[in-house]
Amino acid sequence: MTPKIDHERAQSAALFEEAKKLFPGGVNSPVRAFKSVLGPPLFIKKGDGSRIWDEDGHEYIDFCASWGPLILGHNNAKIKEAIFAAVENGTSFGAPTRLENQLGKLIIDNHPYLEKIRFVSSGTEAVMSALRLARGATGRSKVLKFEGCYHGHVDALMVKAGSGLVTFGVSTSAGIPAAFAEQTIVSPLNDREKVNEIIATQGNDIACIIVEPIPANNGLLLQRHSFLRFLREVCTKHGILLIFDEVISGFRVGFAGAAGLFRIQPDIITFGKIIGGGMPVGAYGASAKLMSNISPEGAVYQAGTLSGNPVAMAAGYAAASQLLNPNFYKGLNQKTRFLVKELRAYAKLKGYDISFPRVGSIFWIAFSRDRIVNADQIDPKSMDKFKTLHLELLKRGVYLGPSGYEVGFISAAHTQADLEQALTAFKAAMDLVNWA
Ligand SMILES: Cc1ncc(COP(=O)(O)O)c(C=O)c1O
Image (cartoon, rainbow, N blue to C red; front, side, top):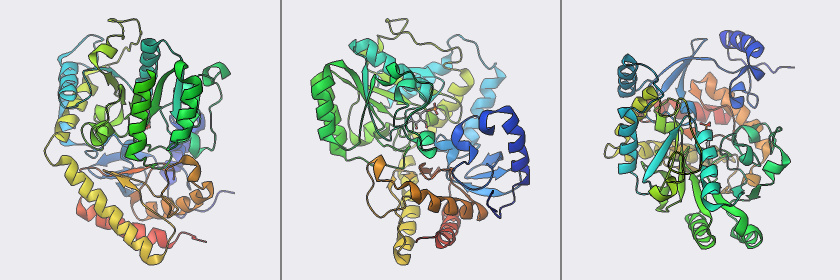
């Protein structure tokens, strides 16, 4: 029986019924189906600044931000203007444009560890291409990834990943030949011994170690700086390439992402989300030498009809230029620190078993007081608490991504008044969770 949710969604519900006839599960990306929270998914009509509106006319303060890309909020004036200006000249040429140079140069000039990049159309495509580059450059085939790190729906990496996979309680997707999965070795995060053991036995076959330097798809599993430094060291020692998957952390925790924040130079970095200013863009980058392996310069083939799409490049450039404003990240981090500090104080006052890990403008709601650094520390039963919290927040005009394994994001568009309004809602919602 469908539980009664006491949050009017007639329009969203009707649209979802129609969508179910059109798309598998009614959606074009699994977590959107609201399977692990209550009620039908909200169909969103529009967004502006920190807010979104659903088809039933409810207004929400948005902490999902399209899963991270909207660091400047919805409908950012400069991005919108850039998109309109680009569209005036056409939408796609399949030939180089000045706009690609502009965005490429802006990124490379402001990132300490990139000499060349290649634009693609999604984070998944960036990661898939980065793996091929690592394999092509090293002549090795195996990949070491970490439990709970999500790298898009790349065949080789759909093993013990986070995001939608963990939301639906599966560790590996169907449709991946065993021979592909065998090329992937999985280690727990934060476990040097395990990594050393794997390298001792299979090091010569490993092309790359891929990690989200800030794992943010299975909760926010903040790793120690020393673990990431250790990965850098073992990679260098054993001729393994280190890939930082910065699809979430890139341009989020600073313009140079986690690599810049931790001052660790990976061999390859992958990007998505923010890089396109809300349009579909991904990218991967490395030293000029390593990137010379990519076609047409080198033998590693990778291409895309819509890669470097002019409208998306214009949006990306308009977004990235704003991130370079002095104090941009300081302001964003201060807001997030405020929200999290107040949430922590309230939870402590009430004695609730909850904590709010944070880095930069990323936060997570963990139903535990322990510091969680590994995927297996998360109790799946705690997701029932998230369900209540999610619904009670929606009722009070606050939108979180519809899964307790996903993180929240603050944007430059969130005002102090937004945060205070959200805090009132959070406190009331926390009070309604069954803490037993
Ligand atoms: C770290 C990471 N890598 C890769 C991806 C895949 O990106 P996309 O969804 O754009 O294909 C994601 C998506 O959430 C991600 O968080």
